[in-house]
Image (cartoon, rainbow, N blue to C red):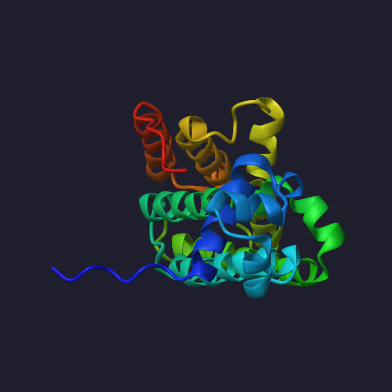
Length: 224
């Protein structure tokens, strides 16, 4: 069997930075620490990423590309089970890039590129949630006044965007550790989707509650 080609240094730097940012928070990780984690010189790291912001922006670009691809899946949501899978997938992606959400306000205050791009992220999330609501409506599973759709979508985006911050406030020492990840993701998906409950048909509302109960009883850690 042919050996896999070694990962290029630039990619290894990104992977190490993402891991360290997620574990300790981006403000607490220097480029020197990233270089030390890889046993390379700071000069080697600067050759690929001359500034810390370049590292952050490259990681953000990876997150944004995955997010935009995932958000398209909202157009295929036809029932609560589809919505549950879609929402949980969103939370899993947020978890993989959790440093962005853990330090979001700080990051926006000092990185103009991400400040601008995250406005688009919020718009794209809201657009995807509106598509999800429309799909449930077309299938006869949801009944909502058209004047309430935008408010509902924005409320769901707020919970989706700030859920990990809430988990961190509840349990600052452990909330963002891998052992607690699955519970946080499940709670986030449940609370975001529960905003749909008043508008759902009875059978679909009961199914949402059943899904939440079933998955809550099978919490397993997700990879860091």
